[in-house]
Structures are given as C-alpha cells and as structure tokens.
Amino acid sequence: MHALRNDLSSYWMPFTHNRGFKADPRLLASARDMHYFTSDGRAILDGTAGLWCVNAGHAQPRIVEAIQRQAAILDYAPPFQLGHPLAFELADRLGQIMPRGMDRIFFTGSGSEAVDTALKIALAYQRAVGQGSRTRLIGRERGYHGVGFGGISVGGMVANRRQFGAMLPGVDHLRHTHDSARPFTRGQADQGAELADDLERLVALHGVETIAAVIVEPVAGSTGVLVPPEGYLERLREIATRHGILLIFDEVITGFGRLGAATAAEYFGVTPDLITMAKGLTNGSVPMGAVAAARHVHDAIVDGAAPGIELFHGYTYSGHPLAAAAGIATLETYAEQDLFARAAALAPAWEAAMHGLRAARHVIDVRNLGLVAGIELASRDGAPGARAMAVFHRCFDQGLLVRVTGDTIALSPPLVISEAQIGEIADGIARALGGTD
Image (tube, rainbow, N blue to C red; front, side):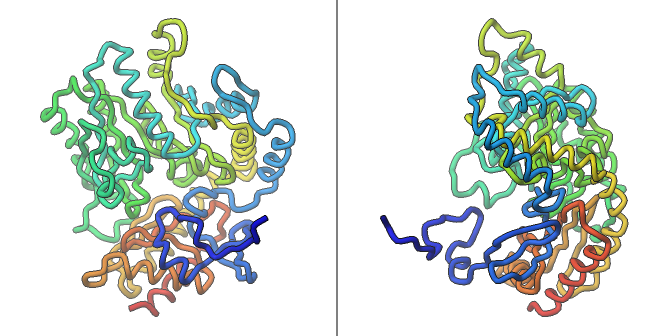
C-alpha cells in the first residue's frame, strides 16, 4: 500500500497555468447556496456560477437527494439498444421548455460533445435530404464551442487552435459582432444587424451547395461577453433559411435562465434548427450535455433511413442515470423557485451595478445582458491577460470568485443572487482594481 500524499503534482489541470497554480494553490473545499468555502473556512462569494453552470446555487437539496437516491437504484445503464426511464422523462421535460417543435433530444456528456454532435447531425441531415455536397461548417470569429476537434474548428479563439495543427477541412468563419468603437453599451447595441450579411459573403465565396450549417453563440461568453446587436440573430436566421443552411445556437452558457428565459432562443425570439446545451442542465452537479433538434431535422434523418441504426453516433454516458436524475431535479428546482423570472427581474439591478464600474481603474468597457457581464480592462504593455489575472487572484483572496478571459472579467452569478450580493460583487471588483497595477 502506497502512503497517501497530496503534493498536487499528479493532476494535470485544464486551462490552467499549472506551474503557477501549484506554486500558490487556491483550493475550494465545499459550497452552499451563493458561496464556496476554502479548507480553512473562508467564504468565497460565487460571481461565476462555478463555471457558468451552477445556475440554481450550490448544494440544492432536491438535486443532492435525487443524485443520492438514483445512485442506489440504477448507477449505470448502457444507452445503445437499451434505455432507462429517467432519460426519456428528462428528454420530454426538456422538449417542453425548448422552442416549439424542438423536442427531439440527443444526450451527451458535456458541452463540447454536444457541439460535435450538433455538427454531425447537421451533416447527416443534409445528406438525408439529398444535399450531400453540403459539408462545409461555418463558425464565427471569437466564438467558443468547446474543445473537440469539431468545436475548435468552428470556434474562433486562436489560442485554443494554434497548438493542434490542421482543423476540420472546409470550415470558415463569420466576422465577430464586437464594436470596440462603441464601449459601455447597455444590453444590445442598436447598430450592427448588417454583420449577419457576412453569411451572404461566404455563400458567394464557397457556393451555397457546399454549406451545411452555421453555428453561433447567441451571446459569446468565453471570449469576453459579446452581445449581439439588435436584429442580428433575426437576420442570420432569415439568411440561413433562405439558403437551406441549418442554424445552430450554442447555448451551453445562455441556456437555463442566464438571460431570464429558458433559452436565448426564447429571449431573442429566434428559433434555430439545433440547440446545444450543458452546464445549467444539471446545475453543474453531474456532467451532461444535450442537443435539441427541430422535428424536421430529426425526422429527415430517422424516418428517412433504411432499417437499422439511423445515426452512427453516441457516447457511453449518453443519458447517464445519475445525470438524468440530476437534470430532472434541476428543472424542478428552476420551476419551483421561478428562477428564470427571478433572473429577468434582477437584470436591471445587475446592469446598473456593472456599469457603475465604468470609472474604476483600468476599465475600458462594460458589456451586459441578463445576468451576465464582461468588464474589459486595459492590457499591460507586452503582457496581455496579466492584469485581469492579477484581479482574479486579488478578488479570490478578498472573498470573491470571478472569471477572467484575456483581459476581461466575465461574470455570471447563480440566479439565486440577491441585490445586496450584486452590490458585493461590484464593490469587490472595484477594490481589487484599485489595488492592481
């Protein structure tokens, strides 16, 4: 028997400066409601819902009990040619809160898997309707769609791509929607809908007969909270429909109340053909993702196939029993506490508090929508990202968890946050900025 040790060296951490972290670790030991707690008992106010995912707050009793109960009843069931009741129940419940007609649900293990699944479904659909030449996938600059090769191919974050060589062939990208000449916009900008016309440029460049789908985040999160201009998503939907291109909304971040509605599709009133989701699906408690497909997409693939397997795709953990139990309990928690409406009601106070940081040291822009915000900082000369990371560390040491991406502080608190706690987040960031060079 080897002696137990914990020198931190064995765990290769994701998206982390491993050497820096292990030289000065910050560890979370427990969580409840709006707070994490360190091993020495310090409370850390959660300004990021974990990683955009703990929308109902930490350790919700209904979710905890559902996972515990399910583990003792059915710990695992194979999803190929077999099923278990909770996966079908969760799919039905999800279909009820998705946009009308988007009630065919394919389960995955994460948001990255959901994106790759949606891309595969789009290709399978085009082949099923006799458009097999449509194999090109269109993403958007500064987009984040997970870390599978499909997701990083359609994604537009350079650092996520540069180490891994050639991506999927035939991928192209729309221009991003951020207008740095118009900082401190509250909500959606009233100009910029014409940026959706970039899809027309790609149609003219590549030929409409080659393009299968276009994928966008309704609100780009991991790249620094980029909010679409008014009319942009509506225009993108119209262009995609006119050219027979499937529209995919990556709602891994925006789903489950983040904007004050079940989906960003509902919030914006724009219905795509496919929606990817994860994170808030189980309140972050058990890994799970999913794709909601419009019936015309599902039926073209399933009803039009020869006898046998219709889509040669899936995962060992698709519809996992513990994740399904957690998902059902999470949806019940959202409904019982009316958390989507709560988020919508808190959005004005959130906007006011975030834009109240406009005059804080180093701040060059603030962007917001629903209960999400990005506070962009001026970069240090020759050290992009260093200032925001210093703020991240200072906030944590002062009892506040934020997230940084580049030199943007990204915020997405649990929907159970109070107005007083919104003030705490703003005050904590202001203090951290005041003490940061």
